[in-house]
Length: 319
Image (tube, rainbow, N blue to C red; front, side, top):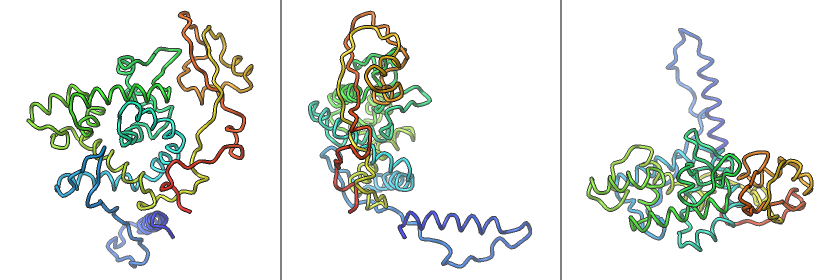
């Protein structure tokens, strides 16, 4: 039995024991040790790197902050599993975009903690898409955002926009941990705090808990996604979500009815929206005559039996 299954069984048994205690009974009565499973604390490595730089885990505060996030993520089973599965679909597209822009691969994990790689992700604050851009920030970095088109939901364009942000932040700070902190807290706030606290790295800043945890959640995500099995996540190759193959159609004119347009292309409205999440309404005025690229998934990609099976990172699965 795996550690995860033992943990779940232990929690069920413990809950049953508590429920069985009637009012007035001695709640301190001992429970046989064999009815509880061992809950394992994930091991923090003695050393690791982030974006090519060594992370000082000999520092007590650094170790404990990473331990907190690693423990949290290791026991957030559903979201962590889904992120690994989705990464197999999106990393093959995202990684080359980061490489072309001179952004380290480790920043892929930023999208993981932002959205769990859910293309439809929308936060209560209205941050949207894989990279969780706010509307104004998306526009600032070249994305079209309106009631008909919202390119924050466009996986490729949003990834390119994120690279523009990350490169600009790196030019300002010269280290990637401060870049990551600014993605959560904003460049203005991080720059101000670096000046006020007279330090050069966000690791050394006293920040609000959300931003402090954000940096170490990024490190913890890297550790788990590089070697999921070490933290109890066991997947087979067949469980990973496969990249989708498409034919591309240029649209330069208004579309009165996307559902009818989709039907003429041999798909339905649901498939159109799922694979083109940047479409935000049932029509497209397009008075400017701008050319949009609409993706039509191939018939083979829409069936598991027809998909070409690929595993982006062999460490993600167990044989």
